[in-house]
Image 1 (cartoon, rainbow, N blue to C red):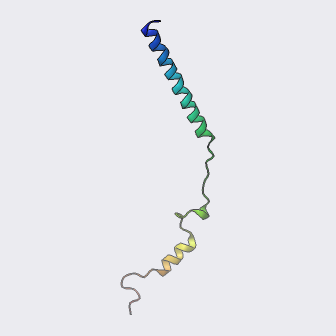
Image 2 (image 1 turned 30 degrees about the horizontal axis):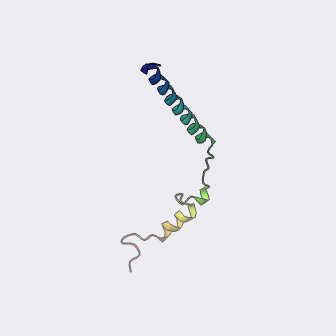
Image 3 (image 1 turned 180 degrees about the vertical axis):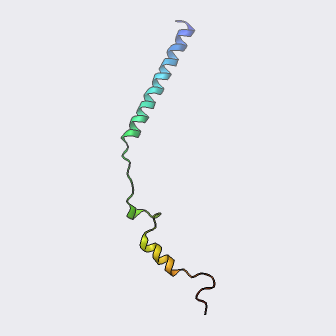
Length: 66
């Protein structure tokens, strides 16, 4: 076998290997079960009661000074 034929065969084996690894990664990614946190468990969402409580507890400069 010539050097060109051996090079082509090695290249084809590498390409097939990369395609198989790529397909396995795509399949694993699609089989992953994605979930979404509930709004009650989300610390970044301000609740209405928290907002009104924090608004009434605030004192501004110049207000309520005795």
